[in-house]
Length: 347
Ligand SMILES: NC(=O)N[C@@H](CC(=O)O)C(=O)O
Ligand SMILES: [Zn+2]
Ligand SMILES: [Zn+2]
Image (cartoon, rainbow, N blue to C red; front, side, top):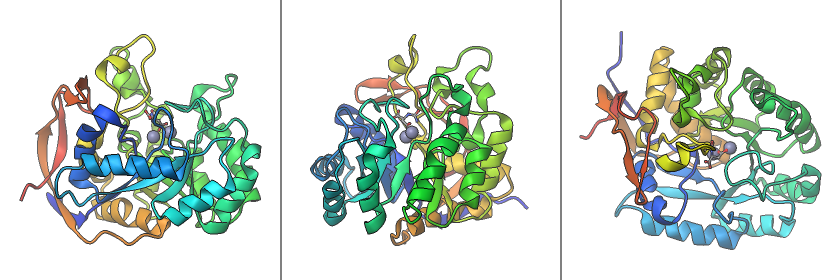
């Protein structure tokens, strides 16, 4: 029997880029339309490195929210070589900061001030472990000798495995996992290790970057992988394991920044996020597992209450515009000019 309507507890997005300035208001509307809360990434220019930065950014988000939207931003700090244990204490005491993000220096968009060597952060990681502040990880090595498709797997061997050994109580979220290696690592790890999975990594393999020509709107980091990896991610997301939860990594860049000689990494999915996950779960015959993945596992991992409201999804082929106006520029959303198979019921 196929399900055409599905009511679930309002989901949360445990990894999203809302940006700042002119872009913020437009992308926030998409996220706030469906998500109860979101873990907001700190890779602004300049990055969100102190609790004071996070509090200021949170105020700008709240000011940009549509009236009456029941959305709560959950703030993060950007870890640098210079982040102190005191800053972690302040972050915890603020009650606003829910994670600290590790970007290996130059691994991805706006990561130039990221960590050059995790050994510089030992005292800070110790403080995070002690007070239960999660470390959120962009898990790719930056060594130019490592093939771009292997950067996540090598990160797990070289960085994550020793990190878990040295800080066994540290809560860690391996963000936007893309490989069998990552799914297996997280499955086998203790309960303090979780992972987010994006909709686009559940729906696409790397062929999508080269379908009939170069497709910059399918370029993100970590880059799309082979079909065998996509299948492993679908298995993990639909397994029912509480270690895996929804994190869109919706990462807006303007059309001109993507369609360029050196195009930016990032895929925009916030306009249809839960709808795209519904497609992926439906294709796997696992719609009954969507609610726990989207609305329970993340909240439980972060030690936050589950949302109480609901949303209803209905099966209906829904067009996606060629472009969306975002901050005065055109942005090309995921599925631009085509359709998504689900929509949120208006009534
Ligand atoms: N995922 C991406 O391709 N890009 C993200 C950064 C990130 O999450 O690595 C961005 O900020 O644009
Ligand atoms: Zn990342
Ligand atoms: Zn991201």
